Image (cartoon, rainbow, N blue to C red):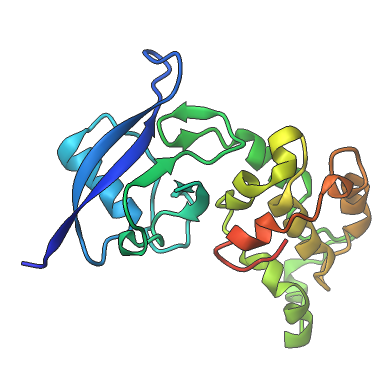
Length: 222
């Protein structure tokens, strides 16, 4: 059997029915060498405390649903190896979002902001499907491909210092996604998106702190 190492985890807990304030619970978890933080959280829920609530899905850094704060830094817990941390590992929900329960946050405002930038191809006149696809060269794809890599994990929103004080700020993911479609050679909706970008609490509220780019797991660099 592979060698196990007992690691202490401090996990933020909050149950709206019973808790007036969030608090930390401590767990000692036997971890295998190749485990990530998400594996440890699953082990806590499966073997120690089934009341723990947290989000996850693909475990492959694709779905973006397992984002949390690990020792104060926004990360995908499916990509945060336990062996890279020393001492007690503290796990908290993403900051700048309302907490629903334990490590689960309400992403409703995040989704609304993403929708607001019209993240789809806009054409003044749609051609018939029988006329074929809208063709694009590799060079034209390269213009915006970086910005299309976003997986909507919301790590950038948890890291953003503007959102900490201005919750209505449009935020880095939405701005980067709108920019992705503005740069797409097939799109004709830049004027509509730019009208949104120039509104109050949008691109001009950005403080250029660069925290969003530092934590992005897909190197989108908003």
